Structure formats: structure tokens, C-alpha cells
Length: 274
Length: 346
Image (cartoon, rainbow over all chains, first blue to last red; front, side):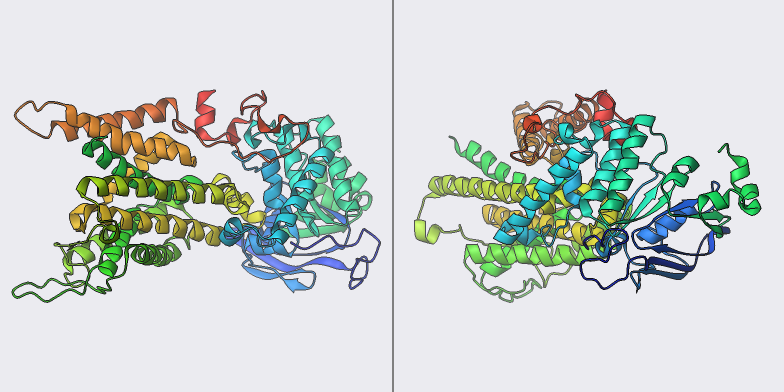
């Protein structure tokens, strides 16, 4: 697991990447499922430390893009460059270790693990999850384990989950599970967080907490790619918005400008009450 | 304690070790391993041929076995466990490349049938249908115990081995390794997305299970003093899986209890059933019926087993009751995410 990049607008600790340089570059990726062209030549970039929205009508290919970025689905063609390295087709765990974490459209927690265990899975393992480490616990690993627990406690405190830290994750409400997903992402301190409709089915109070969570991720230096249908939320938070239609990028820009774009209006905005 | 009870406890301890082995890959990770008894058999065969002297050609018989190293009991058990690890590593590598559990079941059942056919028919590896025999009582050349004394000694040795295996699996279960395995079992897509190498974790769990199986087989053959194809079949693994289901998948203590019930108590108690109807098979038949009934009742009323998997609480977490409150106290539960047994109980 890679540590966080520098805070937005600031050079990172190593000072190797200029602030604002592209962290993610997607070049002409395609994914067809039989005759269905889910993603059909999609290209865009995401700047380091930015919050970029990915919007579009249902079936536009947004979630498939996230699946490809996270390694759950391999692209048929095209390139995905993360921090200058090709990651297209890598396994999900390899992509995670490069610094990309995600939340799912439907919250996926580990139901028979406790809340704190859910966070500890996402913590930097550094060789802790081996049989040898289990049998012969070296001092370095014990310290790492302690650090992970302390961090998990801090993250649970931040996300209001401390009171349920030793409860099974399946006992949480739907909203708490969504918060747990956010806490899990915060726990692993990603360079890039992929958020697939985090507001879906969430009550207004929890929406505020999730918005704080996203802000917190950005403040920690993460870059965020956000799929969301709540356009007011997108407009309020996102630095840039990508509109996808029929598996391709239809437009990129500020939300205020996109509202004036007739192509975007006819493909997406005209169909929803904004 | 009568010789009969000593025998029941000894075999009970060995079968509990086998159940703990299959619980690692099935209970912790959820992969159905129908080849498990192959590793038990390999452990038994390898322990035998490592302890026995070289086989001698006999006139008119094509009977032979490999190795024949005259190793002492402890070395032979270690060697047999390594053989089980290697065999399960090879099978696991082939079976687990694809993650679907039905694929694993198919590969492992084919492995079991192939191993049974090859080792049963080829009389030059482990003596074919005759098998291996002639093992001496471990350590008894030093201890010089009588028959009864040795039975007690071996029973205690098996209980010590069971305690050691229990301690080992508990150590693994509570470690980050065990936690990752459970995450893979619970939701593998999320586990992969958060850094769990599914293939590597599944393979390691499979090898741990296979190694424990071979270890148990090595202990078993030293109790029986002989091993042949009639000692192992795919049905044996079904019995072991039954013990795990009844006890509680994932819970080592539950697995030991389930093993004692299904593999020891029911078969032994039904021996007391008097012969009736002109057949002597009433006891085994009733044992099979009772075992089946017990499994059905457990699946209906306690789907997670008699002693379900327990929460692994994190020590010294302030202000939370430290995991003392039971699951189910939170009213807002998403049915879709609840494990099957829990959802059914509500």
C-alpha cells in the first residue's frame, strides 16, 4: 500500500511529482460484453489531488470504467496509466497495492468480521498476513499491528463507528455500512479513491457525513474519482466533471459549463430534475 | 478406563485432528475440498513406507512399496506431513487458479477418484490393494510397554497432538492471515479490492489443511499398523465434513465437538443396538440414519453449527464493551448482507 500523495496543491513528500500533474490517465479503453459495448473508446485524465466527477445516464459505462480501474474487469484494449505506470489488466490486489482503493455501488462489507476487523483488512499489511508472521511474530510486525489498531480506532472515531467497533459488520444499518466503506478507504490512505455512487439510498444526515468523508479524503491528499447522480453535490464538490454517454466521454469541464452544453443536456441533464 | 474407551478416545482425537484440517480450507475460506482424504491417505502411506524396511520381492506376488527408509516415528510423521503439503500444493495450484467453488469441488473429486484408482491398482507404489502393513508400535522399543500400557500411552500422545493442532489453528485463525482468509470467504470481491491475493491465500489455506490431514493420517496408520485402499474413500471426507457442519464451521472447538458427536459418539453408541431382523448391519445403518438426522436438524435449527464461529475481538479497545455484546443487538440489519444462518433465525 502506497502512502498518500501530498495535500492538494502542495508538492508531495518526495517532491517528485508537480502538484496538479495527472495521477490517472485513461487512454481509449474499451470493454465489450458480447455484443454490448459497455465502454467504447473512453479517454480522460484525473489530476493529482483533484475530485473529479463521472456522470452520465444509466448504462453509460461509468461503473464499468471503475471496474476496469480497480482491476475487477480487464479492459479489452486501451491503456490505464496510474502515476505513469500501466495498470490495465492487473489483478485487483495489485492495483490496491499501487494505491487505488474503491467503494462499491452496493456496500460490500465483510459481514462476519467485526467493524474493526473490516478496517484492519484494509490496513497496510507489510507481510503480516503470512503463515510465518502468524507463527513467529517479529517485533516489527507487532509494532505495525499496534499502529494499525490505533489508526483503526482513530478512523472509527472520525466516522462515528467507535460504538460498534466490535460488532459484526452485518449488524450495521445500510448507512453505517456505507460509512464503514468510507472508513475502510480512509484506513488504507489511498492515492486514488474510486467512489461508485456513495450517496445512493442514503438519508440526508448520512449524506452530510459522507460529504465530510470525501472532503477528509481530499484533505489527506487523496485524489477522488466520483460517480454520482446527485448533480448538486457534484457541482458543489468537484473540480472537474466527465460526462459519459454510450461508453464514451461526451464532455469534460466545470459543471456550470456542462449545464449549458446542448449535447450534455440532451443526453443526460434534460432527463433529470436539476 | 476400559480398552474399548481408550480406543474410542484415541480414534476420536485423530478424527478431530482431521476435522480441524478440513475446517481450515472449508470453514475459514469456504472452499469445498473433496480430496481431503487423499492427503490423509498419503500421510498414512508415506509414514508407513518411511518407517518400514525396504520391501522384499516375494515369489508369485507383485507386491512392493517405495522408500522403506526405517525412519523413526517422529521423522516419518514429519516426512508424511511434508508429502501432504506438497500434494495439496499441487492439487490446490490446479484447482484454485479459477476461483469458483464448484470448480474446486470438481477438481478435488476427480483428484480423489484418480488417486484412489492409481494407488489401489498400482502395486509397486504403496502395495496396491494389499496396502502397507507391519508397522511397529511407536516408541515402544524404548518404553517396552505392554499392550494395555501402550494403548494408554498412544491415547495420551494423540490428545497431546490434538491440543497442539488446536493451538496451531487457533494461532493462525486469530492472526492477520486468518482474518484475511475470513474476508475472502465473506466477500471475495471486496477482499481482492483491499489487497487480498485471493489465489495465494486460498492456496496457503488449502496446503495448511492438506498438511494437517497428512499429519492425522500418519498418526492414524501408526495406530492401525496397516493401511490399504479400503481404509479410505471419498465417503470418508463426507463424514468429516459432516462433523464440521454439526460442530460449527470455522470454530475449532465446535469442530472438535462435532467430530466427537458424528464420528465417535453416534457410531459407538449405535453399536449397543441389539441385532434384529436377522442382520448384523443394524448398528451401522442406524448410525448413518442418526448422523443424517443430526445434520438435518442442525442445518434447520442451528445452521451455523452447535458452536458457531465466534467474534474475534480486538483487545483493549476502550469504551465499546470490548466485544462483549452479542451479534443481533442492532436493530437495523440489512438482510442482504447477513450470513445465511443469521438471516434465517430472525
